[in-house]
Length: 272
Image 1 (tube, rainbow, N blue to C red):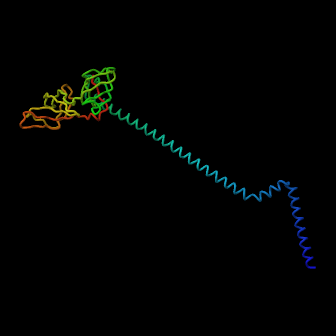
Image 2 (cartoon, one colour):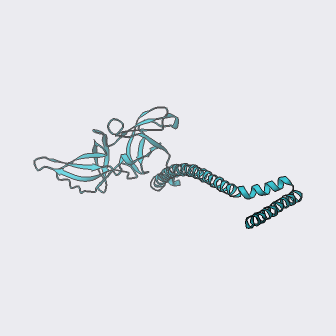
């Protein structure tokens, strides 16, 4: 009897649950429609999966953006380096041109101060020339300069360095270039005057901007004495460095050097 009663109670509960489910189904159907209802149920069931998928997609998108940004930064960095190198090259060229301009102005300034042309005080008639070849690139103490007959260059014209130091003269002239023999060329003889003595002597080139001068044994000559070209303006050719004498010899030898280092020159002047 008890068994039948329990069974009847369970059946009633099952019936109630069934009626409740049917009622909810009918309510959802008429309220939202069957598909909306299914969508609602599906959204509840698949919501965790959708959230996980969105998170993964967002992380992959962020990773792609990271690599894109890194490549973009690398390209930008390379572009900046290229522009920096270009600017450094321009600055280097600018400094080189500026240095040349300063040297030219210095030369012309010295020329104007020390070599006036007559009573007007105007700058002497000269031609500025660049050195194309120096003694270490040409035979003996010679220069090749970048002016020739087109610029009015003639044989025997004097060559000056730093505006007021005579270093040689023109020996060969071509259309756009000329050859210069330096006074210090081995065996080259140049007439000079010993400064402060008004004594005319000769200096002989020894090469490399060096000279020698033969003097009487009793002639006193101190280190630092200058020898200049004959003329109104005393252009220094050489400076005495030492005097070599031998009691058995009736002469003594003075060794001199040029006031300028030819290897450091970039420009010279041709006096017309």
